[in-house]
Amino acid sequence: MDGFKKRTEQKMKNILETSLQLFTEKGIKNVPIATIAREANVSQVTIYNYFESKNNLIYETMVYFVEREYQKFQDVMDSDLRFPQKIEAFVFNKTQDAVKINEELYQYIMNSFTTEGSFLARMYQEKTIPLFTQLIDEGKQSGYIDPNISNTAIMMYIQMFTEYMKKDEAVEQILPLTEDVTKLFFYGLMGKRD
Image (cartoon, rainbow, N blue to C red; front, top):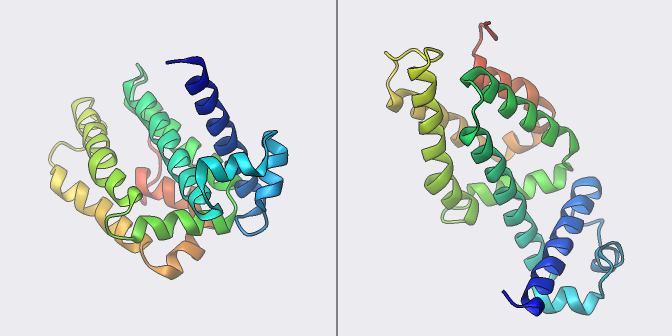
């Protein structure tokens, strides 16, 4: 990769990181391009050259965030952690992210997820479901998930959860309950067992 292309990619990443930080803290509507440009140490023209509009920047920031979170999930899956520690890492990560995220940004992400054929919907189908299947298989092999429960039943359980998340009212209700819902998802009604 030549120096110009490398600098361009680094500058775009810096803009995306800055946008994500500001959108997370203040919401989407409360952050003008001028603020992003100032915080990222670039001109507004540079942002428009790279992203064309604020809407495109918002979308690309969401894509950047989702891909970054997916990579964290993948890194945990590829690690030498035992199954319970992997679950702990997922629960802790999701809880920490939920505490930091602005409700407006969360709604934007969830609305994107509910749109058929969207980046988030494709990411879920193509990458997240296979990783969940891998996690389920690992849990069964290590004795933490009952091997008598079919992957189909487990995936149906996950699908019920994701279908509920597509409802407009769910987006507003779920953010303050993220920690509880994540624990319920992974540990069930009986809670964590050692």
